[in-house]
Length: 236
Length: 236
Image (cartoon, rainbow over all chains, first blue to last red; front, top):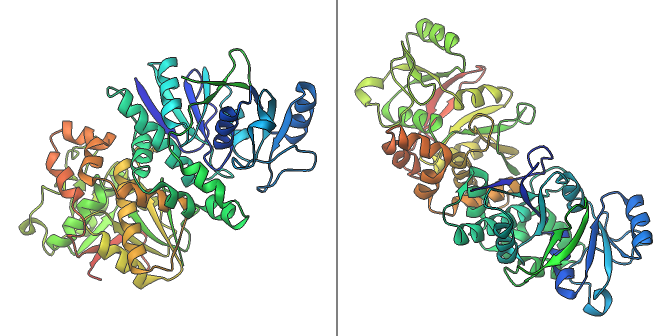
């Protein structure tokens, strides 16, 4: 089997693959925390108008950001530190963020679609291997069309977990690059990254600490079979 | 000042910058070894016909490869292990290779153009800082338009040297990614890379060992002022 990493989403490349979308700062980290807190359904919608409509239709919490902050009419932002179980247990949510939601939409042609991050690296690797022994693509969301170091580190950690669980895997050079990156000091990498500095300056230092933790979350948001954008939590 | 890394050549991005082209396996490594051995002039030409013509015009050795091996009529290949001082001291050469020569041509709009690798990481970083306190771009040659792990590791080592020499530098996320990659075990990374495996299978294991050595070469091939493709060795 093969594991490759895309440093930015490539809609054509993911067709038929088992795909793990990674947006460490912060969308897939927040989605993973929401799964841990008991959220039962998540729709990922990039367009703000459609996200509003979807949240109304689903009776769902509307969460997300533009420029790090929730928009007017949103029920919450995109910070993994801001949610409590009381707020989300048993609920549905719609997430509408700047980069992560667009990356998820760009990967619509995947056969299986999982949301991965450092927090659920081990769990998402296990789930991906449950789903396929063919081709796993780990797709970095990036930031505004550019490589984002936090995503590369997250992808690299997931690659390292896959390598540990399935030693016969073939990795492409981008996967090996990401894995080597993840061998560094993760909190330091996130703090040095462009987006990490932006979040720190905006008062979200706690998010960096939460996002840097590895393998503390058992939950994985996985796209519902037959749906384009609806996810539910799995515990592989 | 700023340091950025391009994972593939981007002709538009390099205009006016001080650029270090990196093709660890093997063009810029071989060029660096040729500088150490006493080559006095190097023309980098991607097209085979033009390379032949240029070598005739310059009375130069014609070196390079297609598919890892020298073409008919070439005086030598692209292996850093194959040359001796007796063969190259005081001579001129033309290098015509699959990826590195095309990367050098793609960077023609750079203000200053240097050939970097792991072997001359410290020297090329020092020379780049002598030339500018503005913007240094480290450009990976890649392999057939795809990221090549050996080049990322080389770029990362050069970034690490720049960081040590000029702590006030701002690095983009790609530079930080490359630097984190270079913190790993370099010979292992080269051996695991796609192109490294190709070279190993073709009998060039020595080239991997030579290419993995860091900071053993004092020489840097630098483009001659006013020329598009002519380089001479510098010792910063």
